[in-house]
Length: 133
Length: 498
Image (cartoon, rainbow over all chains, first blue to last red; front, side, top):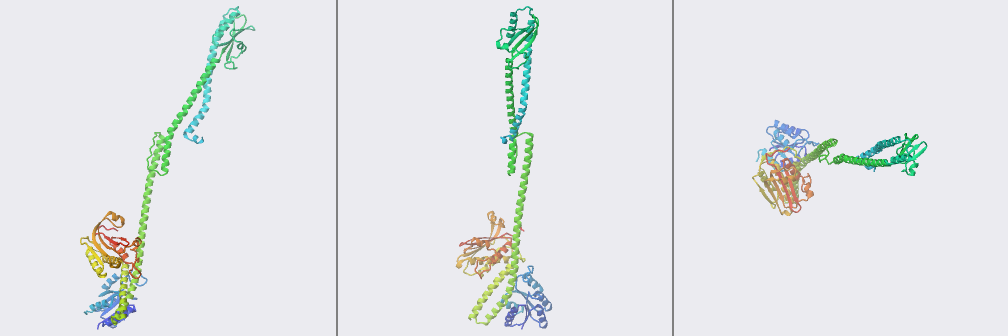
């Protein structure tokens, strides 16, 4: 049974993702911040981490990089809301999603998904990363 | 009268008149006086000579000359020339000539005065010897001929002087006109200049040195004025141009600024929106999984799913709009395959009932473009065209061709140059737009769709894309007839404009 860790500061996102993945047969744990996620990974390894980009504390890209450094085998999906996402107040110079996504790859993320994705899309990507048909 | 006096001829004539008024009388009197005294002298000399002759004759008389002899002598004195009186006083007795009139006889005076005493007779008294006793010969001669001559001379003098005066005045008048006419000309020339008519060259007819010098100066001044005017005009035109340019740039900067802020805001909103949509979408998936497909709840939730899908589309459009300033990747390739791909997408997106006619030429020059953006443009325009058709009747026509742009067409659009362009055209036979709508279609958030349908962002994004491709978008529309969008893209290798 593959283990999946969800890191996102929105409660509804965590709940919804958890339900979808559990129904699909995965073991799911959740964290609200990057650091919380890293702590959880310390205690129990995960096969796949799904992390949001914009969060309080360390952002998703940094989280992904840390995970990649420590846990070679863990797959990482970075999900993003798109747009010139930046913590409030919105700054005109904030980097765009594309460069976020580009840095996501260079930070070690295996895939990126743009919200809102539906269940089918999510499961497709998860299955392909975990080597399942 | 005073007005006339204050002119050059007036003054000249006045002065001449004054001078002559002062000089003429003395001149006249001097001349006539001289003539008079000369004539008088001559007359008197002549008379004395004549008198002396008679004195000599008396002197040569015998002492016992008879009275008759004396009278004869006296008579001959009168006869010899204009004599009026001849008498001799001999020792208290006066012998008079027999030819004298009684009144003449009474008039004798010892006057030796010419012209005086009003009698016109010049009397002389001369002592005579050779008679019985000391005698005095008294003769009187008519002055009147002399006086008449003198009068004649004076008259002639007056005529001459008058004629001289008139001639002088006439000549003065003529001379002053010689001076005046170029002056008048100069005056009208300088009036012309002062009223702004500086384009006629100044050239006087006069050869008077002062006039020529003055008109040379005036001409030089005129040329300066023309030069100054020209410079001023140029400067004003330059300033106005610079002002217009500055204004235009400012407007453009403002516009860009507004778009950018809008974009930032929109991006932020879209981001949050997506975060909200994400769990919604997943919850819907989960709920639908738990329900039998034909249950009413499931049907309703399925509609909600559709709506969520639309919301996602909306959010993506907003995101695209907000991403306008990011760096797109340009490639140089023919647009034909790009357009074909877009058409495929469009046929999938729009109902099959749509009559979509396509004419894509494969012989267009390559264009420096962002293919995804070109496709976005096509999708958007076709979608709009479809929306404009009423009841799915009518057709939408898409074409891609290389077309030379004429001077006439370029003239109507400031950003369009002449020469070959790759033209993407989307035409529909739908309801068209009126002039007011046409003016505003590229504004962000301007939409003619009802609330809930359409975001109003599509065309502003399209416009942005076309501009960033160095192209121009031209719209023509007539209410009830249809609309035609044409996008002109410069072929790759065309000179970059900043």
